Image: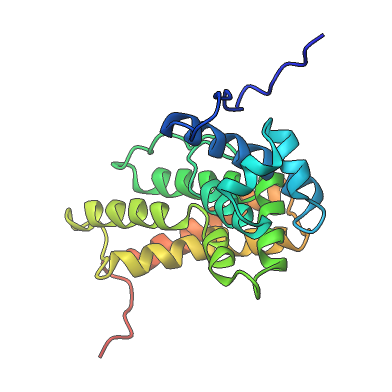
Length: 224
């Protein structure tokens, strides 16, 4: 009985260079397979042989696309953290007319992504190899951060325009909000420290409340 190839593997050609579509499918299959292997066995415990086998390709074909395991690792982490469907699908943007509700929804979406066991494991791998691949560690640590910062900044501009809040520098304020609401839980999770759902909900609610207080037009300012 002929074994079936994995769904993501590229169909072979009879000699010659693969087409662009076949090369793209092979890259996708390699990343999918390598991601699962890295998460399960770590970087050191994953071999190029295992990646090739899991991707349904040959070792020569794999090396033709990725000369070393380091290249696979770089490609996989960069690809994984930019996906909107991994480890969980990103939700639709919240109702931006509801400032409080939108902030809560954005924080919860960020936490759902950051505290997913697969994302925690990915961040742990990135941290473990931070000295070797510093750019990957920075990119992984900020997973979902920069697009969400823009969303929060746009939200603040929207409500500042009505006079409901004071937000002189929305980009910096957005960064502070995300750091307060999701930075600490994510960092704790990378060390295996997870809050209960109820405890995390209280922390999120408090972060939103403190942040909103600072945006009130009549809030005290330290500016001269």
